[in-house]
Image (cartoon, rainbow, N blue to C red; front, side, top):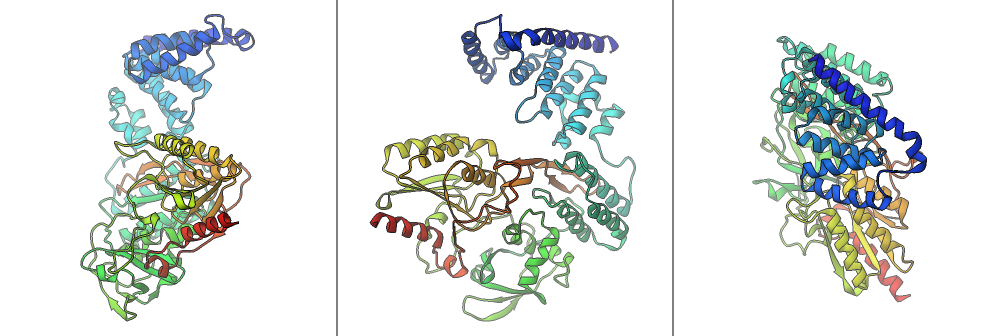
Length: 573
């Protein structure tokens, strides 16, 4: 084992010495091994080999490229991956370390982790553990639960240090109270390890005090109350994307068979399961004796947010959980809720719906009520991730962007951006309406081509770009509108988003609490696409419009109506 470690050290030292020797000359003189154009062509060839998973050819090409020009961390990373896939683990390890030294975008922690995997595969436990610790503690690797099952670390499964790093289960059988306290401590330790802000700064004092208080109160709290109190701890970070969303097998959760939505008139049932469909359109007045207004405000206690729009966006997530209503002291019975409603006929009555075991989150859809006109454009394709429709009379293209992701087994978001650009170039479009009112995020790196299309369209002074936002506009969708705000002259219409332009909490890191099995996510990244000094709570609306309950249940869209009215008015002028 020591001999392998020594060989790895010699390989790495030799590699670094070679690079350092080249650095002082190559930085100024350029490469002497290959002509610049030949380097460029070989880079494209190497990428093709890599995408085709022809790792032997890819490794050969990347070895030439990194020798000729040793300053591109991504090429070192791809060389490392190629060597690793070829089973050359001892050679791959120092290559990944060189990629780590130079830096790779966007996930630098994977170089340290891949180096650890390479060392582990090569039988060098010492260096494997060294770089695994660096990936976890210094670089905040955010998928720790996966490491115990990773076959690369099979040789370390019984190593005490490896288990200390990746296995956080209790080392002895714990009582119920001890187990919950263990989970509270573990939650705080993971915040400290992963959070983009608090990995470098002390945890907020109010969070530490609240955690200590919770640990003392555990004996007199139900599991469901503890779950809510732990969610409250996350709200004290003042960031989004901190959430305990799967309660494990120790916390009971049942659900009201309704989806709620907050309109200017109040809280309404916008969808319901059988046999309660006749309650769609009813206004909720009280949960037991608690007014709907007070119940909405009470969700602030468990809501990880960066602006108040998230309160009215996520209200359904909290108020539909029977045990959460009780833990927030809004209802009397932990397993049953009496709702006072004002039904569609204007009658006030009290109902006691039968709770159900599951009710997934649902975006706003057209109301399922009889005798309504056709739904407005924005509710016609609720499950389509991205699409557009041309309105020739108004010379307007309506584009709905519902998720920052590629369609499963279908058109990628990049392809959609290019298809939209092609359509705009061939069609007499003067107004482009981009609707992100139903977009709650995804992968920020995927919308580049669509953003380029918008910038290209907006560059023509005779064109006009409109962006429609709402409370559902969140996370990567908020990054998208931040980029649009910075790079175009777009007119923003509708409702404020639930994320600010500078998002402190994003890129969720999965955690599993060891005792309870509760699964959650912690924020690990700061996005500042409009600049590091943007303190706005949201991008303000140029044309602020609220959709009322009266509008929604009549299948009207006042936002799009206002835009088309403006378009017609300007056309006449």
